[in-house]
Length: 161
Image (cartoon, rainbow, N blue to C red; front, side, top):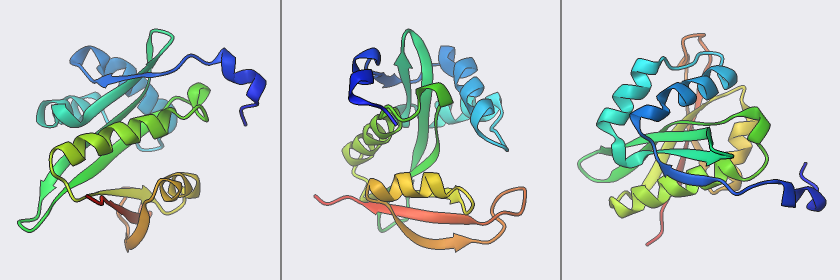
């Protein structure tokens, strides 16, 4: 937990669109955090297809977090699909994940999405609570969604206009 006397030690994160030059740093964060990390080719493909909804957090001159998602059109609604979010462990609990999530949600709203969907491992209760604290709600489970056979919890947040 951050103590009030420690706040002055932290520089604010700059949130900006990701570029191809960020990919190696994004992959490093991904490999640090996830048991089944995306490969660099997947991050590059996402950047190619979803450049408007792909952001990085920069602190102290280096990429310390990222968020990537896309837009999906069901024919009735457009919604954002949050695909991946990560903040390197040494920069967690500083509000950077919240900043990244707020930025991509803002972009989804600008692109007329009515809400956001994401999947999270059923065992990742910390991430689930993070999303619940920011207005996401559990909607259903996907059995054996991950390559390990683990279920996913699908969560949604609807925008109010």
